[in-house]
Image (cartoon, rainbow, N blue to C red):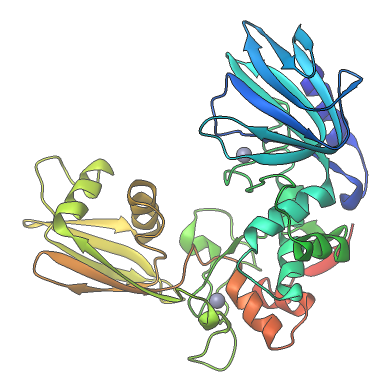
Length: 380
Ligand SMILES: [Zn+2]
Ligand SMILES: [Zn+2]
């Protein structure tokens, strides 16, 4: 009940985007029975200040704090972190978090929800998302896109008692331990700004490198068409896209038929007794990305949507194997060579294109309008 009340309170607050708090489930992908805590500045547990090391553990249906702070066993333990609190454990990334942290348990695992001010959260997201970029205007474009995405997704996990999770399922958030000054400044400089279309927050998808042209959303996902998620050319002059400055703009991947067979059987594209002996692109979208690929096995041809192929390979062989669906296929004797450009799905803002535009002197407003045509920036 408590958790639900918190979400209703957050959702019901007609506050400005900048002043909103975001309840994030941290370590959401980890199944934890215990986690180590170490204070880094002022922290209180259940209203009592403590400093040093403590450990949060599951105790049956309850949770407890041991070490420098003793609390519980209780249904939930609240930590007020005005400084910082480091989290660590075996096999866990060490991260620093701040804000109001509530530790409880769900199905015998720790459930840790960190409620942070919107701009603290945005700075953290931008720091991770834009870490390879350098231009302040590209950081600002990223901050507006991330804030808009957050506002649009604010109810993603309402039923579970929080707003967003800290994984890429929602948006990667790794706390305040490694936030760059550029990211913090970009969040502050664009404080409360949202990208809107007809007055509503836009669906601000973004990706790393478009490869020369972004892709219309409906060519990638079966969602309702959005007039601002269309294919745009990644800037004049032709042949020198803004994102061509990106390391890894062009890539080549060799896929042996043995590997392709294994992946295609796992993905259900081929039957268990079939062996892949060919791959080609049979249809391309507006941008030039593959829309369908055809896998041949003996005499049989199987058509697979390129997005499914890209995701299927990515999930099983890692996202670096086939970096985008923007490729041509060269056939070898026992392999195919994918010769491609770009990194990511290609929908919405090209992050390296934003960097390229900023280097050419464009501001973040120009960048956002270029990748999301017809949208406006509003101060919520
Ligand atoms: Zn999520
Ligand atoms: Zn691009």
